[in-house]
Amino acid sequence: VQVGLITELGQKTAEIASLTEEKKKLQEDLEALQKSMTPVEDEPETAHGLTTRAELVEKIRVLGQDVLDGVKYGFDNAVDQLKVLNPTTELN
Picture 1 (tube, rainbow, N blue to C red):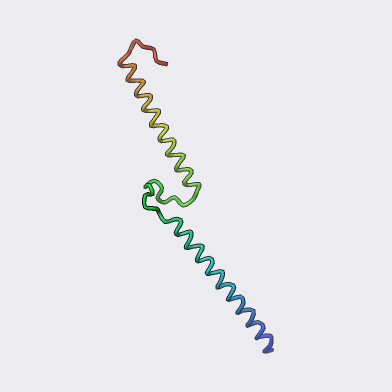
Picture 2: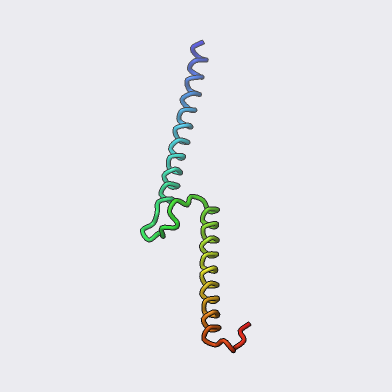
């Protein structure tokens, strides 16, 4: 009976050591992930709170569309001004 208990104790001790090592590795991974998510000094305000690559890609797409809309508005405004200044000129 004692031999079985000693064997079981040895197995449990090995299991504890293995789990302790796994816990240490997981804590290191967690620290690395937390460090990678820490905002950098010159990070733009629009990037705060983004936690996944998909969120970042979506934010870039939205900002790109905003820039495109702004450029289109500016171009259309310039064409309208030219039409006012040159009413007899055909602008297509």
